[in-house]
Each structure stands twice: as C-alpha cells, then as structure tokens.
Image (cartoon, rainbow, N blue to C red; front, side, top):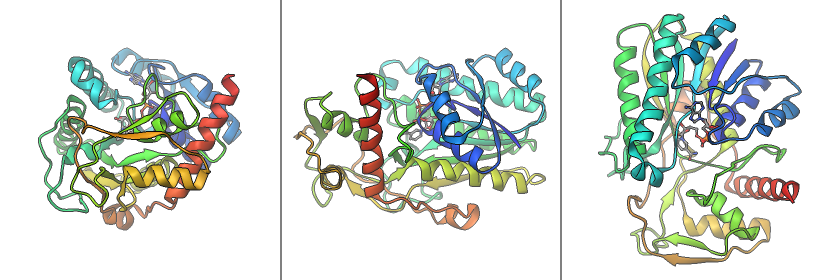
Length: 340
Ligand code: NAD
C-alpha cells in the first residue's frame, strides 16, 4: 500500500516513515524542506535499507499534489503532517499559519477527492482542548477557544474534516498528539528545531550540550504538585506507531466513510521539573535552569485518556520517560558531534 506522507522529513513524519516501511507500507514523502533537512532522507534509508521516493514540493499548490498522484497511482491514503507548528510564532505571523496549515489541507483534500483517494490521517494536537476542566482529557471533552493562531488552525482543520467526511467520500482520522519527545534508537533521526527551541526537550538537550546557557522554566507558581506545568510526554516512536495502526484501521474500514478523533499520549502527566530531574538522573548530565515568569498562553496541566486509541486502534504507548530522555540526549550528542 502506497501512502503519501506530507511533511515526511520532519520530526514526527520521519519517524513515521520508518515505522511504515518496517510494517510493509510504501511511503512517498513530500516535504518542501521549510523546516527539515535533506540528510534525513538518507538517514531514513539507512535505518530501513529501503529507497524512499521523495518530492521537494510545497503542498499548498495543487499542481504539485496532482503531479504526485499522477505519478503514483497506487496511493491509497495520505498522512498529513506538513504544517507550521510554533505556537509563539503563530501569534506574530498568524496569516502565514492560516495560509500554510489550512491551504495545505484544503489543497490535499481537493486532489484526494479528484483522484478518488479516500483515506486521511491528520496531525491534530492536544492544544485544541485548552485547559480542560477534568483530567485526564478524553475525546469527548469540550474544546476551548484557541489561544493561539496555531491552535485555531488545528480546530478549524478538525472542523473541515468532520464536515467533508460527512459528505460521504472521505474517511479521516484526526490524531491529537500530546507532547512528542525522544528520537529513534539509532540516533540517526530526531528533532531538529530551527533557531531557539520553543519546546522543552530540545531546550534541555541544547542546554546540556552547551548551546544554550540556561533553561528558563516558565512559571513555578502553578497549582500543580511542584508549581510547574504538567504535560503528557510521548516518545516519538510510539507516536509514529500510532500512525501505522491508524493506516491499518483505515485499510480495514474502506466502505464506512467517517471522521474519528483519537488522543495519542501516554495517559501520564509529568511536570517540567520532573522532566529536568529525570533527564539529569538518567543521563548523569546536569542542566542549568532557573524558574522564570509564566509564559502567556500556557495552560497549567493536561494529560490524555488514551482508552479510545487502545480499544479501537489497538495502540498503546510503550516507551518510558527514561527512554524518552535517553533517546533525546543520544540524538543531540550524535548530531552535534557530526557537525563539529
Ligand atoms: P516539523 O516541522 O518537524 O515537520 C513538518 C514538516 O512539514 C517539515 O519537514 C516541513 O519542512 C514540512 N512542511 C511545512 N510546510 C510545508 C508545505 N507547505 N509543503 C510541504 N512541506 C511542508 O513538525 P513536527 O513536529 O514533525 O509536526 C508534524 C505535525 O504534527 C504538524 O502538523 C504539527 O502541527 C503537528 N503536531 C506537532 C506537535 C509537536 O510538538 N511536535 C504536537 C502536536 C501536533
């Protein structure tokens, strides 16, 4: 089964391509390299021992999608990762976020319809929940008004998928990712943030390796056990495997057009300080940090109920927090040593 993977050289996309290949699928990658590096393609091939077809195209342009679908008649599903993803930046250049994140989805859907491709897995995010009233959060929990333009694009995208699938030609799954961290065990692929990382784990690893002087923990006075924010961190390889399960589910379900949402997390909340302490203990590596002011737009606490994904997709996260911090650190060290 051929699967088009948009954004397939990015952090989550590259790990998913590896898992797809290792499960017998034939992924085809389209990525405009706006937030990724071409060497990741060679690394994917190194890990899997397979050549991967790659198109360096922008997926907001329909001509590009048409060309891919014309040249690859066996594509049966698309996994749509390609998007801009920095919450803070999305408040500075909202138009660009709406343009890329929504136009890419609309263009892909238009051409999927034209070419009779019915199956889509979409990258949504836990940000759609805002600060839930009850934890853990499940798929029926009410969504809160988005605080960022990024979050708004994910809510709008889910809405689009629900309405379009209701017309009867589309089978769409929206996976609401919690906080993906870690890297492939080979340390050949991992997260590659451009500039100053806005996520915790790459900031920790960059501080530990000496690129950043000090990590600022945003807020130490939240009503959580140690005062810092709580999140549901998930190993990126577990997250990648959820996409394989999603594809299997879509494959078996060809006749029944629908839209479904799944939380993809571990069900376990960890505070920022717990992550730093675990990183230090497991890797025997100190991280300079200080407690700073709260960051605008951050919620205090969220973690997932993943029962629906467990029951329906037959998927469950397996990697521990120790695995996550070890793999993230090994990737950072290997990547930096090669750049010297
Ligand atoms: P990433 O930036 O590493 O990967 C996205 C990839 O898409 C990049 O390789 C980029 O070059 C490519 N891309 C962007 N715009 C494109 C375009 N117009 N045409 C073709 N390619 C384009 O991000 P990621 O962390 O792998 O995230 C993947 C998806 O998951 C995104 O939709 C993101 O919003 C979502 N998500 C990410 C997180 C997270 O914390 N990483 C959490 C929740 C949801």
